Length: 615
Image (tube, rainbow, N blue to C red):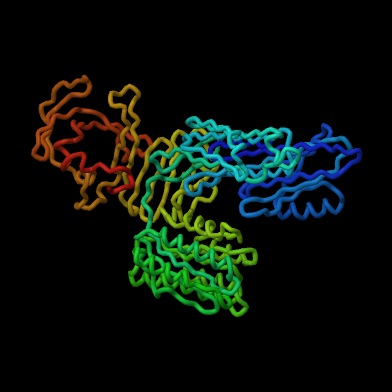
């Protein structure tokens, strides 16, 4: 039995397995399950003949030492070990008496990570034989609303597929899979099972046009930051490819195939370069090249000719790629408003003739100095993965192990797809010091399309009505609040508040709207323009002929402005310059017909399809 409950991207999974010793003598019974590497065990227990034995969950290094000690003394103990790409294996054995049974219960939890626009719940099931009561149940609750849910499994045949039941409403989803013993059988007269592999649920949440979703529960908050419709930032990427002798055969074939597919997916405003290395280093061109159709076609011809040969020279090859970007940047051959990255693909470790690994890491870190990201792809089991992992993390990147299998090409493509669409760089999410006394990581080097930034913390005041979040990115600061307002700061100077006004339920227009309120208008230049810019320095107007309006407390009047005679209505609005949190009521005049006669041009001149779009 697998029971998974997901609330706001946090998964709580309970695996229950019962075994009976049919023999007339005591024997050892094993319990083995695989769980995601990003998950953590919170509870493990065994029930034998009605008595429950609770396990003690320890940190990995301490657990390993205690496990070895327990096994040597004949005690029952379990240990988690690496098992493949995404999973870790937990195994435990216990001796039980004749005709007795044991029930194992393992609980693990996991914060689901968004990749390529979706969350994934991965449940690995390998029962080895048919199970009398086999069931997988998953319940998902997302306060933001669920946009889609998909389910598939590596073992689902045409006969088993109809057994997967899925119910999805606005905020909830229920998925279940319960094959009978007969439906599990691989053949009519055998005990072998068809159930062997991965049961996968993918989904995403609904995203509104805001800069994040903040959830506050029991004195803690979680901020999910994944703003939609941000424009993609162009990429300058150098591929550094290992062609040493150990890359021969299928590795080199798959590398070439992956590079050809990746080149085909480059955006035309990207710049790229190709460097191949063994004991010597060769470049396709001496500088980065714009990803036009013609240049990509030429690069593909070059990639098809890459062949394996000598030893490795990782140090000089990576430095060549770094210096190529730095030189092109300095010479202004590549766009200034872009993100730089080097992608190293290798299957080996530094050569004996090279500097030691630690020295290579120091050389690369010194050359990059935080100016770009280094991503390292380790091909195969012999690679010095820890060396690559440290080197990438020291340079705003990450490492990924590429497993030697038939889908290695897809692994390489999938990794590049994750990192090839950066939207933001150097993002800081800041929270009020007087409201938060504990915080997880809140600085992020890169934010990629289809991913999500998650920050959690503990609140000092659980009764907060207004919770402000400052999102800093380069020369723009954004202040997001729980009550749908944003303070935007441009270049540490000009500030204005964007406030979402919720129209009351029975309003004749039934439409919410945004209000823009300037906090530091005097800092704008005299040349500002646009819908808001034309009013930052004030306008000349005259109001006369005050007369009763449709509402007694809101009189009408005549306004003379910009050569026009307009009918206006007295009203009230909030001014946030002195009191950013609550604002204060100030009298104002409302212009009818979408500001016709007051604004320059027509209202349609200022309409865009999204807040972050210009067309």
